[in-house]
Image (cartoon, rainbow, N blue to C red; front, side, top):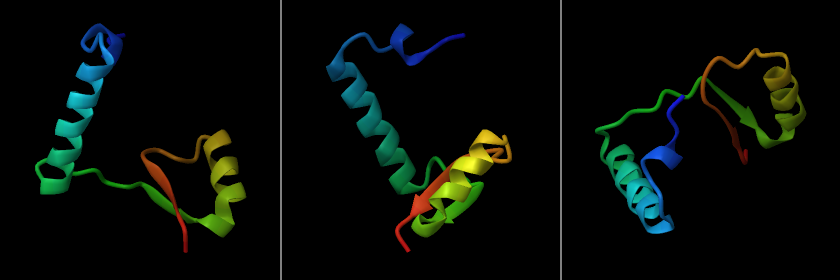
Length: 64
């Protein structure tokens, strides 16, 4: 499987690639659909769902 290490060999290249990616996400050129949002108080449930393979995409934990 290809990984970033095959394309980005230095820390500077990694930082530049990350900067470009976050700029594209911020401008809306790349959209990320969040599969599930968990409140911080539900972090145990988030871990249980992850371990049970119930999360089928990106999941985030929000402070409130």
